[in-house]
Length: 451
Ligand code: BGC
Image 1: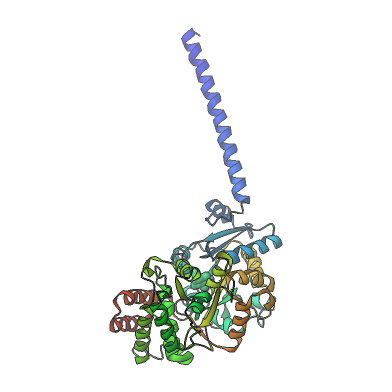
Image 2: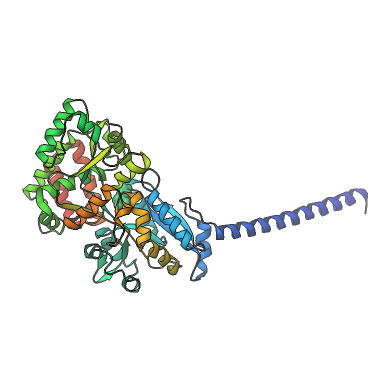
C-alpha cells in the first residue's frame, strides 16, 4: 500500500469509526427519549404526541390520562390543579396530561375539541357543559360511552341532584359526571364603591337603573363588561330574558314553545341595550378577568359574571367575600338560578378507559369536589359535600340552589345547541354595537330552528 492509499485507508477507518459511534449515540438517544416520554407526567398543558403514539399498541392502560378543559391561569386553574394533586396522591402510577386551552367559556377549547373529536382523536376526558352542549354535540354523534353502570357501581344515583343527572342524560342513558354548579345570574359589586355612593343592593331592574344613574353621575363606571369574547354580553342578555319571561317561559323559549318574536324578547333586548349604556367604553378589548379587575380596583361598581369570578376575586386578587366584594341575584331573578355545570365523561375509543374512570371517580367524590369547588368559586354538584369547606358565598349559593327555580344557561351551553349559541353570540355581538332591536330579534328568529 503506498503512502497516499495508506492515508486514505486510515482516513476511511476513522470515518467508519465515527459513523459507527454516531449511530450508537443516535440509537441510545432515541432509546432514552422513548423511555422518558413514556414516563413523563407532562402537566404543562401541551399534548404529548409521543405519549399518544405509545398508546396505540392497544394495551388496556397507557398510564396517562389527558384532561382537556379551558381552565388555564387567571382564576380558572386552581381548582383543577387541586383535583389533579388529589388524583396523583391516590394514583401515583397514572400520569396526568393537563391539556387546557385558554379562553373563557371554552371559546377556543370547544373548537379544538371539535376538530379532535371529528378526527377520532378524543382526549381521555374533557370539560363539557351539562345539557345541549353534551347531548346535541357529542352524545348525538355517538361519541360518548353511557355511564349508567358506572353510576350504579359507585352508588352515585342519589348523590347528585336529579336535575343535574337529567342534564347529563339522554334517552335514559347518563353520559357524564358533574364536578360543580356555577350560578350565572349573579352581580358582584365593590362594597366600598356602594358605600361611598350610598347605594343599596338593587333587587329590581328599576332600582338597578336608579343605582346606575347615581354611580354614573358620580363618575364611576356602573357596570363592568369585557366582551372581547361575546359570551359575557350573551350572559347579561339571558339574565334579562329570565327576568322578563320568568323561569317557565324562559325554558319554553329554548324548548321552541315560545318564539323569539314574542314581544317580551324585544323588551328584554331594549333593557339589555339600556344596561349597555352603563358599561366601560373599552369593553370590547377586555376579557372577563380584565372586566372583573375594574370592579376589584373600584373603577367600576358591578359585574354580572358566573361565580368563577368569585374564585378569581378570592384566590387571584386576594379579595375577601363580604368585605371587599358583595353579591346579589341579577335584578328581577331572585329565587331563580341560572345553572352552569361543568361535567366530564368518557369518550368512545380512548385507549385506557379504566385509568380515565379512576380520574372520574376522584372528580365525583366528596373529597374531589370539596378540593375543587372552594377554589373554583362554584358549589359542589354532590348533595353530600361539606358546606364548612365553603365561604359565605358558597354557603348562600348552596341554599339558593336548593330553594330556587333552576334554569339552563344559554351562554354556557345548557339551553341550546352549539350551532344556535354560535349564532346567538354573533347576534349579540352585532347588537352591542348597533343596538338595532329588530335586527337582533330577526337574527334570533332565523337561528331558532338550530336550537
Ligand atoms: C365554565 C366555567 C368557566 C367559565 C369561564 C364557563 O363556561 O362553565 O367553568 O370558569 O366558563 O371560562
